[in-house]
Each structure stands twice: as structure tokens, then as C-alpha cells.
Amino acid sequence: MILLTNLSKTFIKDGNKIEVLRNLNLEIKKGDSLAVVGVSGAGKSTLIHILGTLDHPTSGTLSIAGKNVFEWSEKKIAAFRNSTIGFVFQLNNLLPEFSALENTMMPALISGMPKKQANEKANQLLAEVGLEHRLKHKPGELSGGEQQRVAIARALVMEPEILLADEPTGNLDTETGKKIEDILVNLNALKKITLIVVTHNKLLADRMSGRIGLRDGKIL
Image (cartoon, helix red, strand yellow):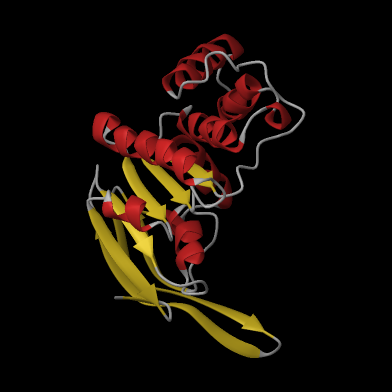
């Protein structure tokens, strides 16, 4: 499903070369769940941004379903990302002026899906994450855990094959974080979505089918 070959990422800061990722080689099969762990600054978030095609590597390749995605135009990459990859971040980035339902619908509407169909899909997904009673509430009226569940529903509205989660329980208390863990694990098990989670949460990492560590930009 996902294949990294000699993938590197370098930044230039104040004239200094910073190698964030160094010659990574990794294969993630369809339906796998993978935890990416490591100390802050190890390159975890950079890796997840490249896997999500939000950033380009400096060298090497990323193949998804046999396609070298960074050979495409930015427009084609953006369309592929919207249809194939879902994102859940520590900061959920919900739009404060829109309701839970409207936030969930947003990627579908951007893709050109008819509003009625997007509404039906968003309703279904919010019900699946236990928020059928909070459809019209705006983010400021929801708890942190509820906001993260909206973010998960939004990430799933386009029925992506890949779900990338960057510290999805990082801002949550233990009990609420466990509920988010359960949702992610069940999505992987029931819908066979390929799940990649960047996390400092050992309990969440232990529930993934595989784990890699990053240190100094290299896979342990």
C-alpha cells in the first residue's frame, strides 16, 4: 500500500543544513496499523506530513498503491489526498463558525459531492462516533473529546483508504483518550483502513499491529 524508498528530508535554517529524515525505507501493507514513536524532534511529524503528501521529500520516493505520487502535479496530488487520505491532528483544526455536521461535511463539499449526499454521510459518521445528538453544536460547545470525534468523522467522510493521526490523544485526559483509541482501533479492524499513528501514548502504540521508532531521522 505504502512504500518509502531512500526517503530523506532536509531543511536549511540560518544557512545550516538540518537532516530531519535520513534514507528511510519502509513498507506498510493495506489494512495495517502502525505506531510511529520517538522523542520530540525525531522527525515523526515530518514523516506523517510527507506520507500525507502535505510536504515533499528532499530525495527518495513515496509510492502509494504503486504510484509515485510526487511525480504528479500539485493539483493532482491535492485531489488524490482529498479522496484517499484522512487526517486527525492533535489540534483538531475544526472551523469554529460551523457546526459539527458542517465541519464533517466540508471535505465532501470541497470535492464536489452533492450537499444532500454529503449531509447523509456526515450524519452517519457522527452517529458512528456517538455524536448523533450533537450535530448542530459548534466546536466551542463541545468537549475536547467530542471535538476530536468530529475530526475523526471529518477525516472519514471521503471514505479514505489511509488514515493518518498525529498525536490524536495528546490534548485529552486518560479516559477520553481511551475512547479515541477505541474508535481508531475499531476503524482499522472493521473498515480495514490503513492506520498510521504518531504518538507518545504507549497504550495506543501497543494496540497497533506494528511499531517503528524514529531517532535522529532514522528508523530504529
